[in-house]
Structure formats: structure tokens, C-alpha cells
Amino acid sequence: MKLHEYLDLSGALSVKELSVQIGVPSDAQVRQWQHGYANRKPGPKHCVAIERATRGLVTRADLRPDDWRDIWPELVAQQEVAHA
Image (cartoon, rainbow, N blue to C red; front, side, top):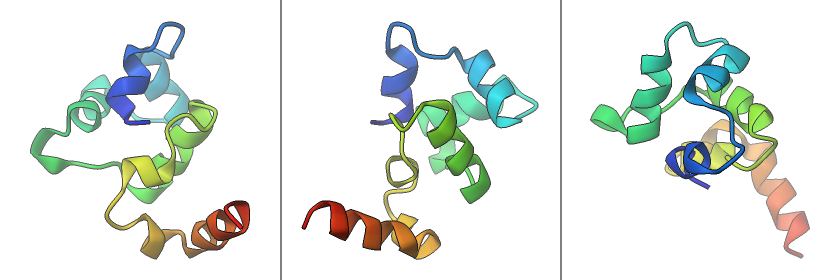
């Protein structure tokens, strides 16, 4: 699920709540990721934190679709086992 889709869900964390939970000092940073401003993406540390804060609804692969396999190769193996 894309971050903007999650934040639109009823009962989801607000931008403020998410920023506090993942340790981002500014709501503006989360909003930039939410709207894809200047193609900005969260770094690996924040991707993991977002995945945890959203209880897996927004995954690292969702947040970094172009390079998640390079950053977290262990997830590729997990995904292959899950789909076998």
C-alpha cells in the first residue's frame, strides 16, 4: 500500500502521529514522502520504522519500489519462500 493510501484510511495514524512514532522531527518530511514531492523517498531506517508503525500495511517495498531488493536482499528470499 502506498503511504498516501495508508494515511487516507479511516483509523490510520495521522501524519503527526506517524512522524512521532518514526522519529522524524517534522511533519513536513512525512508529507513530502506522502505526496512524492521531488521524488523524495524515506531512507532505509525510516522505511523500516514506517513498516512497523503501520503494522506492515505500508512495506519497505512499497516505499522504495525501485531499490528495495538491493537494500534488503533478505526480503527477496522471504518473498520467494512465501510464494513457493
